[in-house]
Length: 520
Image (cartoon, rainbow, N blue to C red; front, top):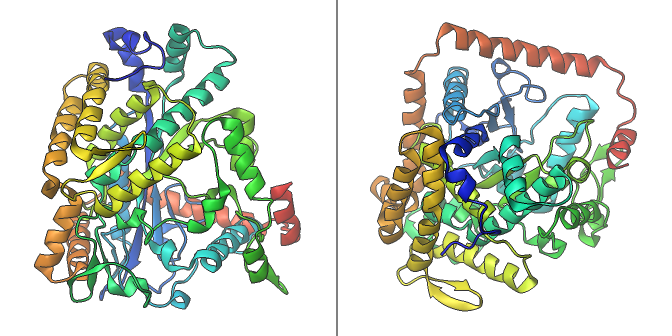
């Protein structure tokens, strides 16, 4: 049974008039993917100039590596717009890649040694240098292979009108922004409790190429020659083999309040780490990392969900959050779906909307150290063995069977699916919930199970992912852009190149002073 933060919170939003405010939910996607050459090896070519300047282009950039594309959609209150725009980005990009393709899976294959993974080069301006040095520091600290793993992020926020109604029915105290931040952090804490639903339902990285381990030992099993897997895994990307950072276990970043969260990040970017000090920050004029502290910058902190705020005057993320409060959330647990040509299935966003509303309305006490350990255990069990028969999760220190827990959460999500259907009309949300619920009792229908079946059929994960990459490339090429959309993308390319050139023409000053100003 769903326990509300206060008993009358949900009732106003069940009426058709108030439910309409949910049409103001703002969404956006970020999708990463590697460029690979015709043989499936990591592309060694520079980011194509025909895609614009990655420092200044609003939609097409790179993440860690020069070959790791990152696509960013504008935020929109139209639920269909982000994926439609993301498809346009893919269609435009596919036409610029010549003999290269976009890798379909989250886990890379033939990337070579660390030294063969080129860090993204953003140019000669101080802002560009800082991005590059930060990435060099990531490679130094954690290895470059970890930085070639790709996923997708879902950015999400509720409209002002929603918060006015909620604060009124809840008799919330304090300023509106304080109330909003407090409730977003309550949502985050519940997401940390229940977010394991996402890798179970949508995880698609149960296997990896043997080359990814670079000779390291592991407990993985042979699926077929050259491919390793965990039999019941859902998302090795989110496991200890993937995009996780055990070096950050000592950070103890709390999500119990905005103040605790921002203070922990501020402390981390100013607290020296002996190992990072031993690695060194500079060798002459060459910067190896931005600093030798626990975090170089706040974004180095890995989390499945993060509160975000765009600074009004270029402030650092933690400082912007502290000054202005939470603006939106970034959900980071989605693997790329290799069966979809843009890597993201439509039902992912619909389900995330429902789950996030559940997390917002459900009671959310502070997370104790004991409960955080329990949450970590549950997350690890799902990503490593989520499809295992008789799987159990921890609930208040007690082992409980996975299916009843998952079904109970789906029951609790039902009113929020109905609420969204009232807001938008139709039954998209309730039908999405019903369709995904079947995956609880039929784990063979999950993307992770389907990836394993396909890897067996192709006799390797690499062959499967390469086949999908080529198939998606041809599919995108077969979807021509209309003249107006093509002109818009071409104009964005030229504008980004011009803006990068303008930035580089300005007086730059000493890079060391630029870095010091950032941390001031």
